[in-house]
Length: 70
Image 1 (cartoon, rainbow, N blue to C red):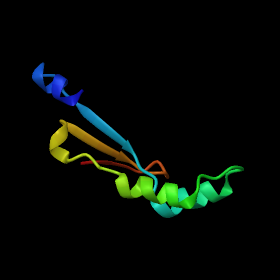
Image 2: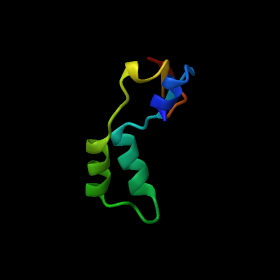
Image 3: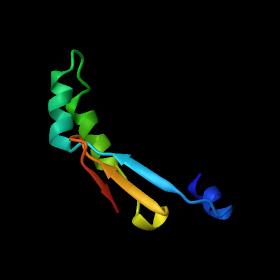
Image 4: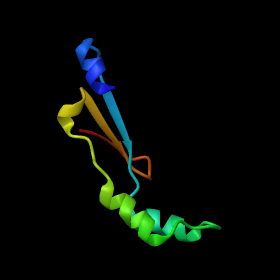
């Protein structure tokens, strides 16, 4: 999708909603039916953050409403 936008000269923005692994694990444990810890760990290992060159703007949003523009 980003490539298509670049091809047409559109400005592109990626917004990443980020929850640190320790906080995600704590929230998961508090759920009535938690996801197995190994599955959650695999998801974090497979996470592929965007490069800052992939869009005109890359925004990272943290769990406490912290926001960083990369």
